[in-house]
Length: 518
Image (cartoon, rainbow, N blue to C red):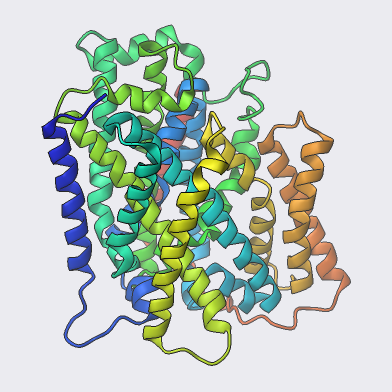
């Protein structure tokens, strides 16, 4: 596959346009210089539309587009549960979590842990998140993005890694979160337009010129790829274990990711008000309902159009090869946009945690301009490490998306447990939180090797229950919390009529989708 001059021109126009836009929206008025709040939290003034689109842009990247299309090719529509259940999770985050975080002026998730429990848990979890973000998330986005650039544009993969990292770094380096969030509406619009184009053109090819006929034919000829709930005899049951997807471990994965993950929740923390944050979360939940059309359906279509792929993760790039000139450029620009947006979000969150949770706490108080400089240097360092580590860590995996979920599954039960207890059980203390967080990893390893046939999602669910029990037991066996600066007694959990109505619509659509594709 090669890009025609028109395709290349479209991609170049996107890159130039998004860079210029990022610099324009990042400008400061008059003589004002960026402080830490400006750089890491966009001045705590993000509007709802920026929050909603930026949540999706941060989430949907190469690991979703390439990785979930690959899983769609291998498993089918069942992988869409990650998207559809995320919609329900976002409603929970907006309704119960964000009001507490915003009431207490939280800037980072490790900061919440310190104010709720103590300094030790903040340090432990900040180290964990930095390792996870750099060596799992950042590397996976770079690696899968470079695969697409290599296959579509013919650029050497390591060169693609360097170019992706450098551009994502450059366009957000000056403006920080503001540059990322206020350009994400362009990124998401391009992502949706490009993704729907791939889905429509592949279905049109299957249906002989009729998109709807193509979908009906694909469903009729490959019904096994349109089942949301896999039966125990399905070869991929271990990855998506039937009803446990709806009732078990996926809830833990989603609540941890959308509620307590710095590079996701940072958008909500930067909102100008709770109401604005909730409207943004509702927009993101609505967008989540259509994401499987973009990130899963092309992979299922590849089952009919390219049944003999060597690796599932080749499905999306292969479908791009069917696109006509001009449309290919648009879709490739959309893919690059998704990679750029997610990379920039991850880079900014790494810089935020490193600067605010480590550097700012060492020695004397630093001035705001100095902290912004350190954040930029941390961003550069993270990209360099990510580029160098991508191939050694991810080069041998056939389904990178499943690798990411499996790896993070060792840690998320404990994270989810200590945050939920911290939010809603006043008796939880730092000893209990440390026991739950560290015990989660040990328990996950024990279950993984002691019960190797247990699906990883079931493992996540059981380890979560055990981590909560461990944290509660240790908290009760030790003295009551000596530090709890988090106020919940005066938090207003009421939501607007618009949020209620939107949430009901999202839930109703989820019921319909699961009923149709059960």
